[in-house]
Image (tube, rainbow, N blue to C red; front, side):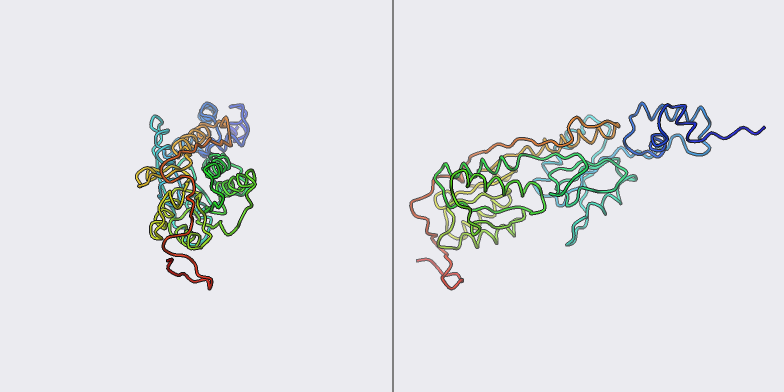
Length: 352
């Protein structure tokens, strides 16, 4: 009598797990604890199931590499990368930093993950992704993600609290005309910082004025254009809060070009506390978010997922801290710009 060939159901029964768990273990997918996977592989070997599925497939498909996907290699993502690297220093994983070709459309993460997952990386951390619901066989963690619903672990900072503190600080200095240069409208951080700015104004009884708000999208060139328009009016703001330090540093340059002295004529507050914030003269007042820790916490979550465990926390919000430096002061008695104002016809004219 011919002996019946073992099936996946026999393996599941021998290992004491579900058929789905056997399939995951045999195909090297995440979500299976190492001890469970070893038990499955032992059952495979004992039953002679190797003839159908290679018992070592799970191990052979592991790359030992964690990918970090970033939109651009700019100061914020660089600091996050440093945090990830530090967290992986004592692990068995190497780090791959990757940025995909975005063009003008969102969703570049999907294309990047399809190229990397399963063959080059075992898991990924996505920094400021435009999408968070991505179909992939490797575990994912998002840092400062898109504003939409997410079904994966998230690490972010308290953008609302940081923006509220920054704006309140300017109000306490005596400023009432406070501009705001926002970030990317699709990111949770930008929406929260906008809300924090508005809340601080409301708490102080200062009406919100849309003329003092512009979208810099976290980009230097865009923030510069917005700042030129905002500061080239007779009734310009006496202070500006920018949603990130790159935008704030662009405002500093615009102020210099317009003949405005910081902080005498204009106070500026940024957000992030990137290394460039202290290298500039004057040093930038900013809201410090723990960028390195964002990366380290994301790496910790991902390592737990790779072990087949659930992270202790799946949505982590880290605190921020206002760092006063040399770009903020009480408003001067006169606020008329010294070089350029907007004429009544909408153009620009030299101030006299």
